[in-house]
Image (tube, rainbow, N blue to C red; front, side):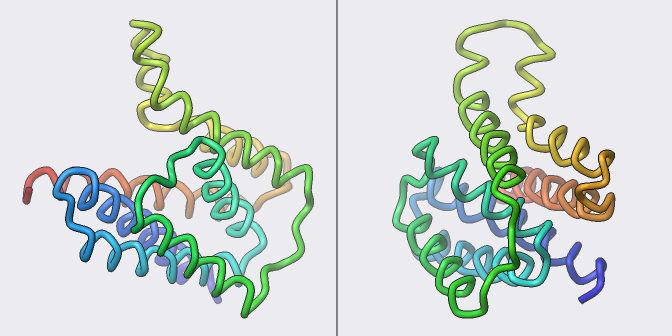
Length: 175
């Protein structure tokens, strides 16, 4: 699988993840939230089982959200279950525990910071930093600059984030 296909999987995953969340949170539409959650799980799991670097990112996002108690709807549980089934059936690449823990910690910090920072400070930089969940972006960039990750995986992660934001804007305009 080329980086182009991997980038497409990251794009689809980010887009479907945001649509699933917004449909459930804003419209209470369990059916379509679950459908987009399933599509997110498929795209994320395909990337995870193909690339160990993608596996670090998607597994970290999953575990970081679990620890932050952000898995808060049946659509999340359906998405989580399908992701896990695909990964268990196909198998995930071998991962370094330390790198995985660093990625999980960054995802967890993003989720907690996203919820709390604006409540405890008026600092514009910090609010924007956590509003757009930059901790994991910085960590993935640093891992790429250190040669642990390929710079292309960082770009794929940026595509994921861009698609996530585009889905949010699209949802607001259509909703």
